[in-house]
Amino acid sequence: MNRKGLTIASQLLVLALWGSRALAVQIPKLELGLGTATTPGETAASLQLLALLTILSLAPAILIMMTSFTRIVVVLSFTRSALATNQVPPNQVLVGLALFLTFFTMAPTWHQIQQDALGPYLAGEITQEQALEAGLKPVREFMFKQTRQKDLELFLKLGDYPRPENKEKVPTVALIPAFAISELKTAFQMGFIIYVPFIVIDMVVASALMSMGMLMLPPVMLSLPFKILLFILVDGWNLVVRSLLLSF
Image (spheres, one colour):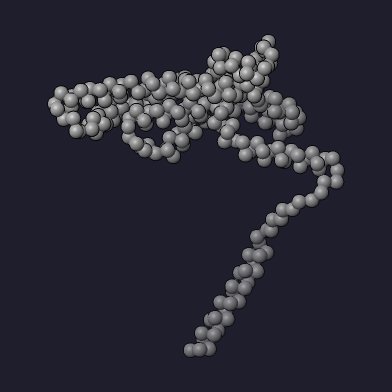
């Protein structure tokens, strides 16, 4: 019995060593290192890599400040607050829905970037500077359509920029914050309109409770089912999303 146990143990040990050796042969090893650039080309490539990593680190801010994400997520948050359903839908659901609605609304713009900038650059037809300029153009066009002139004039004045002759002369560093505050104002206007019917329900329920002398009963507790019922009957999410998409 001991001999059989030793034999089985030795066989298992051999199989384990053979398997580890096989895995060591099949799995490639990745090595990263830092060295000194010896040619101008290597220096330029290192600087380009550093710039790319910087852009990737700013990608969330670019997604939020230069797309339709801000308006969408604020309006969805207002909708949840108007319903007074606390954390229903949860933040993950609202942010996820806002992201996919952003992808939907920005799809034509990103398609144009792919067609005019990214595709030709990867094919070697244009330089990096030309690709950056061509890719920024459709994004600027989108922001110009949603930016109020008053907000744009504010940042041009505060930045001491000369009055631009046309849209191409407007600096992007002034256009982005102007676009952001314009989106916030539009989102708050839509949020106020969403709030109105639910405020009416709260007032009706509060007046009914007061007339019945039930002052200790919170009106929100009774108005919440009526809010949800109204939202379901009018197909609220469909109306909110439709209004958001049509606003662009």
